[in-house]
Image (cartoon, rainbow, N blue to C red; front, top):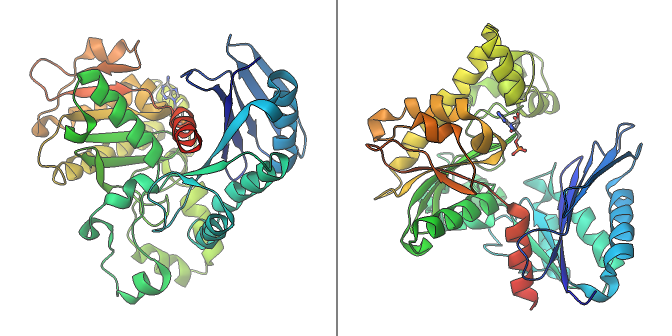
Length: 395
Ligand code: AMP
């Protein structure tokens, strides 16, 4: 096979996603996921171009074991040693240093390591992935695509916290924002769909998955977003609280909770899971809510209310608005969440067409009523954008 390939690696704290692309093809040759790494339940699931799935248990596999297994299998099938022209890595935090996809050399890697203090759960896993792939393919360029990079265009009044300036200058305490690759991808594909150059488009994008954030995009650039210094700020998420009164931290401290415990409560035990006491999974909660479960109903109501409030807030960051875009696992699939959220946004000029809202068949679909500002459901594809940016840097 003479095709050239780009491999995309997305290491999470306990998971790993990958996708292999032939240059010029939008659809990956193979995608895969390793879950619950470093635990007895670790497993590996892969899917090829024809949709064939393979799943096997890999008890206690580490990120390293998993990457090695993936590379060995791909090498066998696609002869990567000869065909690979780039590896693209999703890196969660690039601090203020990185505003675009960047070729990784020793100094770039050192700066990614410096950002560990800002993203202690995520950057170490990203670095593990980079170092392993560097070792495996020393001749192949590695590219870092940062979750924070797209938001580096935010103006200072949007990214500064109203706390003493020394915390910004000394420690870099400011709002950075995340999910940048996804916000950028759906804004571009929706611009293409409406036939307008992205440089002239302004959107409010809502990436709603297990993590969730909203972004105000003016003329193709991020001007505000709901996540902050860490991915905890903003919307209600699967297990993250989103905004709470900062006074809560001191209060819990005074009740004997230490930092690690507070961090765990707000990041892993809150959000939809904390409110419902049932699940962090939107589908499960919708099912339970439809059967009359009050906690599930409340969790979904808080989710939609906070989301609508943030979308309304983002509108003031834009001088004009070409539309509201829903994406992510919930944004793309939940008829209920879109309907309930848009119902709260009537005052902003958004109303939904219920039939269109139920009938999402294309990568970009308009779902507004005839009297509404545009509302879109756009499928995100972070891996594809990472592959494109990596290939562009290395070709
Ligand atoms: P992500 O993190 O983007 O993979 O999104 C995961 C979230 O999407 C979970 O909360 C899922 O329950 C939710 N989700 C996926 N499919 C659906 C669906 N058909 N209806 C409602 N939520 C869904």
